[in-house]
Length: 395
Image (cartoon, rainbow, N blue to C red; front, side):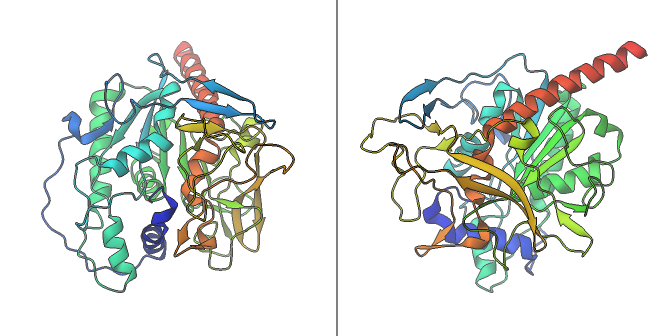
């Protein structure tokens, strides 16, 4: 996915093709494996200056009355667990699969979705040869695309195995993905983690912006046989997933998210705010644009906000909704025309000036609840460490 609304057409082509399983003419070339012992094949690694996670995450907190304060951020060098992240469809490379050079797209999405987790865990984010936006747009035009559909997954698998062998050292692991990244992690979890010994090291999996299946009325089964849906902020070895839509614009009949095959199945929706039992805590990109293409004006008449992120306490709230066979995170903007703070947020996919309602707020799935996700990972990490210590004491 691209993370600027004016590129919504490319984004729509990308995920629609992935979700519908569009037929492709795959070119199964003998492609050399990446050496994940080479640091250039990683976007983020812990304690490495100058990589994609070494970015400015300073945030302006805007109260309802328009008053502002600045929130600083720093990584935690002593974080007790690791985070392993797979990014969504962002590459604009003209090749069928992306190359292994980090472009502005990969760097930007790490800034938005992953770098902030460095306050809770050691960060690992491999580059991988994903299906590009260029190829997926070709597919959506009805033309065959000579991509290698397994190359990206195999790259992530190689990076995962290298990480386990050389970096993990028995630490707990949080898996984080969005869109195509969540799809890749779902496959990795199903084949390499679910029901395997390594599952004991799983702290949790945050699979955002994708359709994770579970039997109706149950918290286990479907996409995973041994990994349940998270029911509390201290539960470990569980999965958290959701796809967000505006409450004022719920999923239409042709929605891309919130629906899974099978009459007895439903898509997983876990509300991070409810799981943490506090208000929705968003970190929104200050350069985001609304449906008209204009930058968001966060405070009426004030253009002094220069930080890359804003936090707007109380402006957004969310709840999981399950209706008409669709399960999704319904996000309400609690605007107040009498105060100076914005009553609107950006985040819709826009094509030719028209909002694509079947995408919902896919562009900001992670931003919407970033503060809550961080809090949950922090609580889960403590629970994991405590459980590991207790287990060792009993041996």
